[in-house]
Length: 496
Image (tube, rainbow, N blue to C red):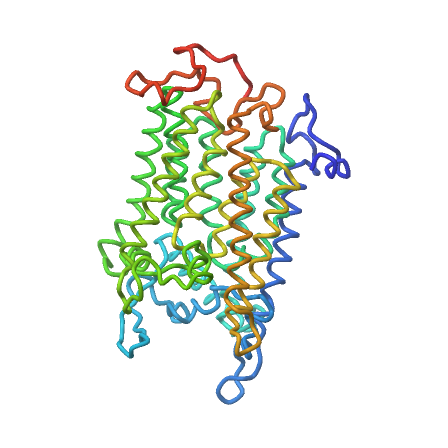
């Protein structure tokens, strides 16, 4: 990235004053690159919002004939969810019940299955789209099918959220601001930014890390609470803060972050839970009852061995209780392993390194890995392991999984691919993520190989932890103390 940056001015120098240039600052260049890549992402989904006169009496409708959404690799959850959740009728999520017919002919009642903040985002996008459509009918605005307007409104909001993610990552990178260009040009952005609504959570997670780096733990907690109200994964960042706070005797800041995270999450969720308890619980019910996802390691094993899963064949609505327990225990083992590494490494690990290990561990052990979840890893990987060729190779592999996935969904009868072709690429992706984890662990134990820590830099994301001495509490067993640790000896002063 340093070599590429010479085209537009080169790496940031030791005495550079960031933000003083009138126009082409590194941050603005990175944001412009992000906009260009997101435009490619929108064009990739555009084939799925084409219209044709296939409705009643020749009315215009979305052209998904002959599995176009799979053949054109343009599928997005946004389009079908618009009608499924009656957003086209401006039905309020969590209040409106949806009746669905199961495979055995029974009728089940469903609600919006997303966390509260993501569900409210969809409702807000539908409301804005409705206003736009009214303006189009009045001849004041260009018109399209309501679902197309809704998709575009949602896409604008998601693009803004990803720009916030890029912006926060650039600031977190410190002097290595060009590393954020990897977030901007990621192939995963082209494929998955508009597949679902995960950019909302990445924006809150990235800004929470930025607040923590600026020594504002309470603000970081508010942002983590908002992120957890959109997706679960921002909550894992608190785990990274915890083990580093234990090692540096800064638990007070961690407790402040935890308190504001809980308060913010409750402030968003409690009103919906009290008004519409069944709708609010739908997210938790679905995650409890759903089986192994096509992208999960458990399904990969099933496809190649014929294994029927820990629970065997399940009836409709029956929870895979053993699978749930196994995936939870495996993730807890991951957390314990990351905690052990963080506490015993000869030098305190960086926040981003631990965050990546925790989130990657969750995805690898969880029973669900929806394709857009890979976006969670992009900013964390760039901050944890800023090696351009390694990261671009992983991102390309992960993005390419989309093609066999779509052709598998298209079905063999429609000249699609067998499931094993798809799950084989999942194995390659998982191995790539494991390789990133191994490299990060290697650099934790060999900090002299860490590019971020060159020239005396400690941790740009460390916040209140940066520059603190290693001060393990007395109650911590000796085998969990840093290797070569000298009791409460202050580390050399390092630049954040």
